[in-house]
Amino acid sequence: MLDPADVGRDMHRYMTQYMPQSAYASLATLVDAPDKTTLTKGPAVTAEELSLDDPRRKLAVDAEMLLGYQPLLKDTKAPGRLRRALADLEIEVLDQISVDAYKAQMVRHYASHQKMSDPTWRIKPLRGYGQPVPEHVLAKAVEIKRVLPEAEFYVDQLAVDPFLIVSLVKIEDFRTNQPTRGLDPETAAYVEVWDEPKFEGRV
Image: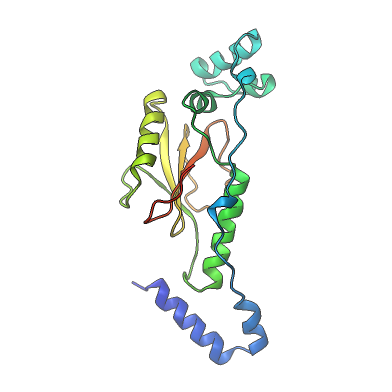
């Protein structure tokens, strides 16, 4: 099996020996790794949104809970089960736009440093995931699972800084270099990020 590091070194050797210096310089521009502080929190659910005093909003929530029908949620601006549960647990989510921007920057960083032959983010189910996960991340997942037994958890990872996703629907797309078009904020959310192996990142 090829080692990505060896592939990167071979590519670097080829470019420095055989490519015109001007072309190599344009390709070899190094991109700094982004800082996790660029990640921002998603909008919080307000008390007004959680209120069920409005009969239509209560119907929207009940229709999703009992019938699996969601369109009325958007019409009444009522948060769905996932957002309501996370709000009740006081669990903040990461803003998906900032996550997508961070992931794209990480891909450019690894590609420009020739650290990987194919820097691609991949989503893997937490169930069966073999790498270490910080205890505070596991505790958060357990807390959510107790409230939402149907919730499933996934790890979105390139090489470092894995993200934890909670989702009420199965995630089919396991290659995520493109913006995460499959994540509906009413049914899925990024709830944690950590720095492997130091586990420094925390929402």
